[in-house]
Image 1 (spheres, rainbow, N blue to C red):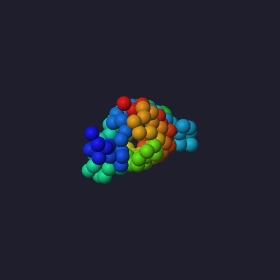
Image 2 (cartoon, rainbow, N blue to C red):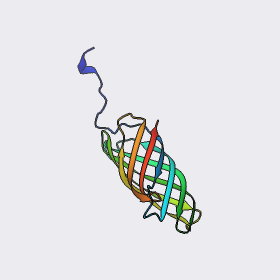
Image 3 (cartoon, helix red, strand yellow):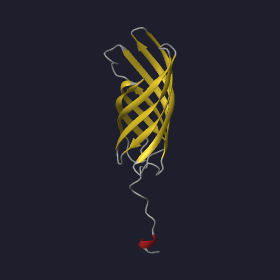
Image 4 (spheres, rainbow, N blue to C red):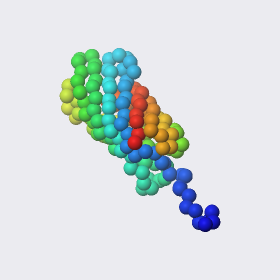
Length: 142
């Protein structure tokens, strides 16, 4: 067999593990008035619909928040994109969150940085969003 006939994987594609479990916290909350903790499942859909360096992401989960008037659980679902290659990625998601104590259904979003090496089991996230506020997060990919 000659090397000219060898099929090489497309190195321009975003190649990461498709499933992850994530935990994020708002360290210190927003001026100590709002402190969220969230856990969620995320699924990456890697295709070439939006280009080889962009993956679509869907996450569902929930968490707990405390604030100036009390606190309670919340449940969220978001859809968005993850861009970039190698270990640095931009993530942007929008969706909905349901709060038991803050008046029901509200918009949810996040914009942040994700550190995840190709085929790695671990993720690191940081950014801003709602209901996560200013967050730091860690995850396990599988």
